[in-house]
Amino acid sequence: MPRQKKGRVHEEQARRIETKTRFELGFERLKKEHPGVDYVVIQPNSSDGVLFLHNAMDFESRKAILNYGYYSTAAELRSKFKYYKKIFERHKIGKIINH
Image 1 (cartoon, rainbow, N blue to C red):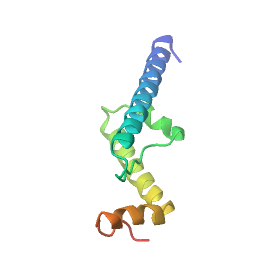
Image 2 (image 1 turned 90 degrees about the vertical axis):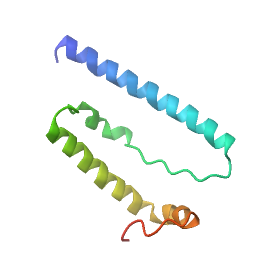
Image 3 (image 1 turned 120 degrees about the vertical axis):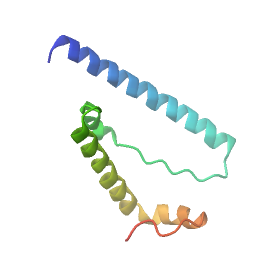
């Protein structure tokens, strides 16, 4: 891998780590400030890092990323259906997934 590209990959990785840390700290503060609120956060696994190597300006890459996001979210909802169903029913959110 050329030196310039390696630098960009490391820079992107550092930015993702910083963003994740800021999100986690902010989310913890939010949960403390609003303890009775249900939160649902669905985000890529750490093993999904390959998604970030795609060129976001390329239409086919964006389609692949969106497609992956859709199906991985549906899989997440299916795998933890009982958990999400309880939360969504509490908030009168309709049918979330054909289970």
